[in-house]
Image (cartoon, rainbow, N blue to C red; front, side):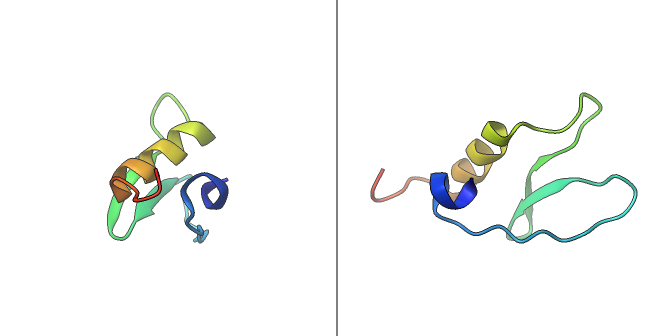
Length: 57
């Protein structure tokens, strides 16, 4: 979904202990909270926002 919506490829890195974080570079842009996991749309929006405005957008 990230590739289609934002044009970036995601790499899954297995963690431990129920950790779920989405990073762009070294910056965490979305993660699991006490309320649960972020939705796919929330993840796409967080990644897109962290990348800034796109030239084709």
